[in-house]
Amino acid sequence: MPIYKGGCYCGEVKYTIDVSPDDARTSLCHCKNCKKFFGTAFGLTTKVPVSSFSYTSESKKPTIHEADNGSGTTLHREFCPTCGSGILEVGAAAMKDFRYIMTGTLDHPGDLPPKGEFWCKRREKWMPEVPGIFHKQEIKD
Ligand SMILES: [Zn+2]
Ligand SMILES: [Zn+2]
Image (cartoon, rainbow, N blue to C red; front, side, top):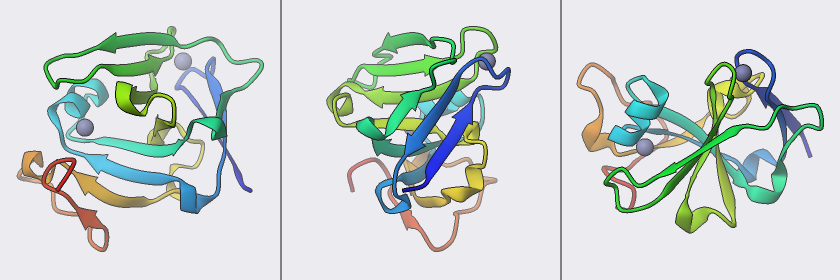
């Protein structure tokens, strides 16, 4: 299986993902939470099985932030304590099975292109759809 490497902006947090591309799902998300956390118009994460993800032995420990900011679920996020780069996130319900890696922290983000878009009803008007992938108005529809 390919091993994908990634890390934060300053290089103190480093990780590997040992996963087949078929078991990794990159997606855009246009929800309000993603806009806030990413500081951009949408979030871009890669969903991988929890067992495939690990911080390297020399990596600094990430800072953890957990909150329910009104979405009805507790979101767990990990980011670099030094430079602030978001590394991953996961909702309480998926905690034991998956991690959603911030795709831009991969050393080669283009290796795992998006398979879909969520929360398209919150898409910024200037941003076109990505063609050829699935499009959901919310999470479950
Ligand atoms: Zn960093
Ligand atoms: Zn989102």
